[in-house]
Length: 414
Picture 1 (cartoon, rainbow, N blue to C red):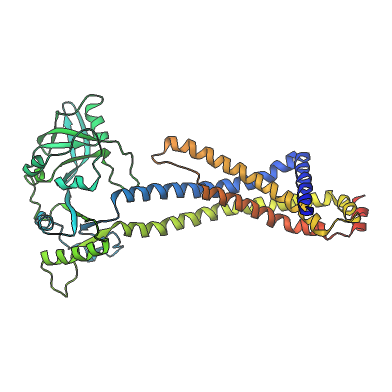
Picture 2: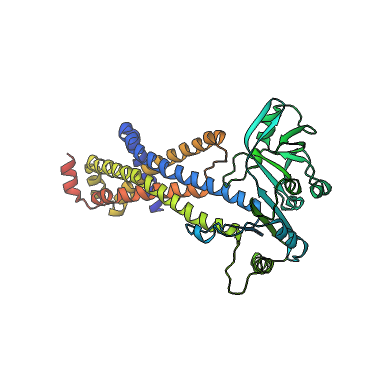
């Protein structure tokens, strides 16, 4: 009960002091507000970016392995991989026909970008992506209109295509594209579907500016066994098969297909999303550290400002301290009064800073290609930093006030 009464009186003194010195309070709040705003805005941006990136990675699946020429974690050792052969259509067919550990095996290649035309409209630098029929088994084909290739169309290499939303808008504006023909690779291709708008992908590969055609269609124009086009084979694990087991079996299968001797190094890469996830941990860790360092200087300035104000507050109330101590007030009671005032001052600045970050995330989300948010963790961090700065900045002035001799304090006050 005594402590509650002391806290109540401390809050009263703190509020009265802050209201009585509005300009001083405002200037003290400003430093903490800017510091909290700087730190939490960076942390919120990094958390939002990380959440969106990891969400996109999760959508691709953590049970998928990509057979490619280049490893994702190859670093600067490009000379080790430049002479590797590209994956071929024959390798894709062998894996598709005899690989019991896989639920689905798909292939895609990347021919040179094309200019696509429809009557007088054209879109340049379009990435045409030939894919196998099995590509739809990876859950990446969300259509807003029309359909995906049928098995017959894919097997026969029919001239059909599914457009990205931006390509559709550039060629057809508001008209219905289904059933109309465009010109790609100098050949007419009939539109059978349109992808849902994805927006800018943070990890690349947005379908908005791509056109998907059957893999066998491109085989009429390119020999996919010569390795002249960059390609990849995507393998999805069967239910009950772990990704480690899938990778081991896939490595053995590819080594057998390429007839590598036991002592030969792999001349292919098996890439997994876990490689990107591990890299993201380090990347976002650096960004968070940078945000803390950037905002730390602002917080430091704000802390000095609060400490200075608390020294002034102790000096202004010296005679009050003397009267309180002469009436029996304990040192911890005086200490609590000034610490509470310092914490309230710092916490108020922190709350204003958090409110500014919250408003900023709402406004920025309207213009950004990703969702920005202020998470609970960052709110707790902001409040924790504010309270800590208040305690650290106020402890020395509060201790000086608590240790005053009552007689000297009363004499000095008058």
